[in-house]
Image (cartoon, rainbow over all chains, first blue to last red):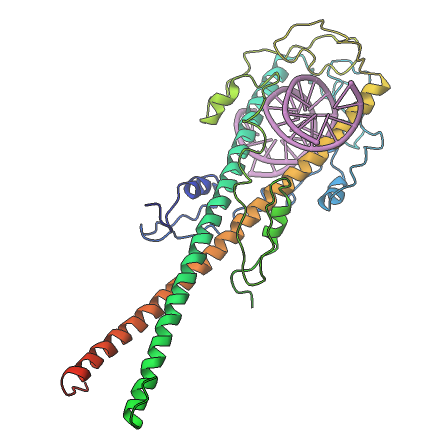
Length: 186
Length: 186
DNA sequence: GTGCATTGCGCAATGT
DNA sequence: GACATTGCGCAATGCA
């Protein structure tokens, strides 16, 4: 039991984790298919818009590793806000009225409702991401195991093939000798 | 060019992304090795301590999907803080003095220094995580491609083997006939 | 204990 | 306009 080449469940789940690109074509039960073009890579960032405020050009540095220099003391000032939440307000470089940005008072029920909803969405999204990552990892592991098995199988087949080829060549020689001269059964 | 079974670079990078468990044994240049035990799964959470404050038991629900209920209006009050940063203070359920928690005034240079350092560490850590995820995805894709190639190769070998076996069986029969009676060179 | 590393969470900007 | 993503900072916690 538990041979090779099967849908392997994890792969199935992984596929369902990538909506919008699941070119799922029903395959026969005897083939593992192995579709999934690229799907991964470029989840959505690095290819569209990004860098709202804090990101800036930091990404370029980090992509190559090290250089986690401090912000050079920017966008971290404890400004005296009128509402609450001294968090980022004039985050980006665009200067506006520093307070009460378009009358979205932090204490309005509207605001709290929106915040709470977003928080829920965020939790949900991150959970999804976590699951996706996990599935990808499991998938990679599974593919790796399958790979080992396949390589082993290839080894077996190759050896068997070599044996048969050897036997055949022997017979061929023997047959040629039989047809040409007498015999030299070495 | 670009045949199958090679170290494939991405895998190499992926391996280097998991320090502490890299059981790298030098292999010959002709084998792709394919080691990497489990490494993935259980990155560090879910197995040790967790749920500092906000998490609570929410995880159990989310693990199965849906149910992203709001916090039931908790730990989200806009408390009037004396220092700044009205962010979370009494985050968890543990009630304490609402202000100046153990004289770690938010404006102290000590605090800011620690915060900035942590921020840097956080950025670094997340960058690392992002790279790791990306590598895992690439690795999965690459393994998948390799898998397809291997399966193809197995198909070829199997067919070749079948052919040779057929030929051999024919010869065997022919040989048996030759040895027993006269000939029937069909 | 000090310092960095992880991680869940909320916020705001932005994408869909 | 609602929900989904994502970078960021904060705080708690893990780990060396």
